[in-house]
Amino acid sequence: MQQKIELLAPVGSFESLHAAIQGGANAVYFGVEQLNMRAKSINSFALEDLPRIKAICAGQGVKTYITLNTVMYEHDMQLLKTIVKKVKATGIDAVIAADFAVMEYCKQLKMPLHISTQANVSNIESVRFFSAFADTIVLARELTLKQVKQITDEITRKKIKGVSGELMQIEIFIHGALCMAISGKCYLSLHAQNSSANRGACN
Picture: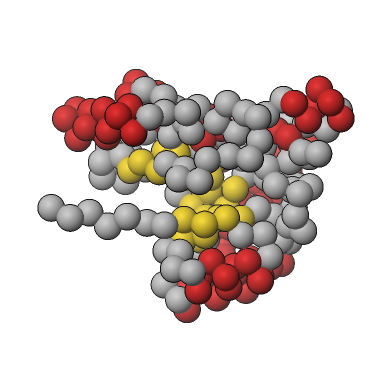
């Protein structure tokens, strides 16, 4: 049985959004405001851009995923809730996150969720745990193809299903990473520049 692979590309501007679509991406992911890992490295989209992003992508049959993948502090909760409510109202397809506060709020709003690579999922028991929150998991970047296959085989064998009742879906990075990190969790910038990459402030 042939399975369709979804090609997902990161975008940080309307120019890169159009380039990703023209390049054949089936889906795009992006952040808004400051609660995403690329908040400082690009000119992030704003909340008011969401309807335009969704309209452009819907017109091309491209899915939209938003990253809320930084470490969340207590003072972030109000902005987090505001973003998720707007995301759901706009019809964005899913949120990508690793913080349990984001997972819980998405669960409350019945907002589709993908578990970020920042969660460092490296084994089938972690997949089983996160299946209570999501239908898709972005596996740890450090896994070999053999390890990825072992996990996907076990999902099928053990019939591990996500919140939709369908078998869990797996996403993997195919372009590696530019930073020194374990599954995107980088501490070098905090050490060298006192700017936490896990808060989107990578230098």
